[in-house]
Length: 140
Image 1 (tube, rainbow, N blue to C red):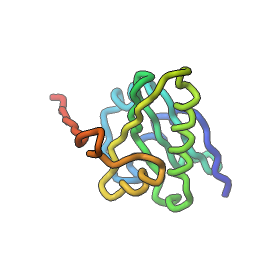
Image 2 (image 1 turned 30 degrees about the vertical axis):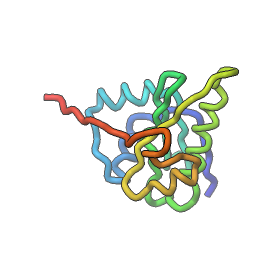
Image 3 (image 1 turned 120 degrees about the vertical axis):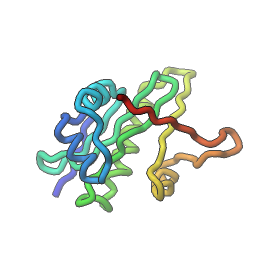
Image 4 (image 1 turned 180 degrees about the vertical axis):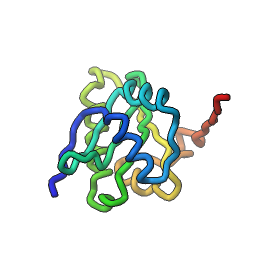
């Protein structure tokens, strides 16, 4: 079983299937298609022709947020997630202009913080940052 990694955006059906595989909610199709098409960077992992993992980054060249870090549970424990994260970070690093810097953030699923610490992320709050915050808005 060879795992291959690609710098590409997943197709809509694969994206939905990955989200469902880990029990995540599905947004409306219009939102999901728009979201994945607007990814600044996206890495997918494939076994044969099946997309078994992904992550993407959205941002503005100074700040990026890593979202949708998903590995189908059937394939977890094979370092697919860490390989995807490292490849995604590498793609971002390749595009930092000379003298520039980038801040990459994410919101870890509960209990997954240690995975991201192993990937070089720091838990906040810390000496430089307060806690992360979010707001969810529902359409009518």
